[in-house]
Image 1 (spheres, rainbow, N blue to C red):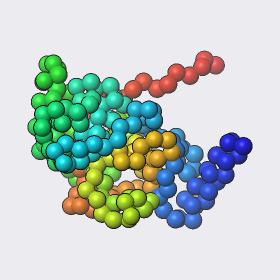
Image 2: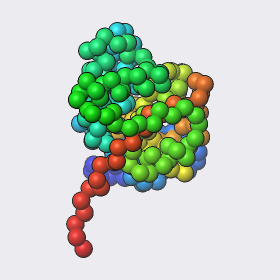
Image 3: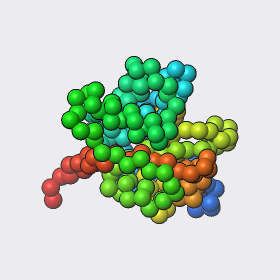
Length: 215
């Protein structure tokens, strides 16, 4: 019965994509069955919190990326921000300042590299996801209708990016079957609509691929 329900759900999602009805929320496969590139286990999803009354979505997204790419210096970034009494809201200059400081206080001899990018180059994001890195990206509205369809100032994780689909993990919507799949153009609008796109990409290598049985 569960397999039948899953098959029906997949058929519905594929049908919606085929007729151009836009973004959908689902599991770790695109409407056409493509597997998500950065499949952070559900039990590691972290819900957004606040520090001094401001949301920690930037730091939560960096935490997700640091878990995925095994960068301990930046893991639990929201807790570090809270412990130091820093307002949660962040911008490129804050990331440039606080990530190296976070790494030094945690004993790193050198801050792990990261790209603090401002612009609109989707090819850069495709390259990051294709090589197993999980960008933290700005997000100004939900193509699938979350947040009542209104504009928001938010950061999420880009977990898939190719010529057909982009997908985000939103730290306000965590858990199973919460990945938001959209077209590249839907993503571009959400990414850049508040004055230009911003992405934080950790440069550490991705996790190794899962083992496969020998032929």
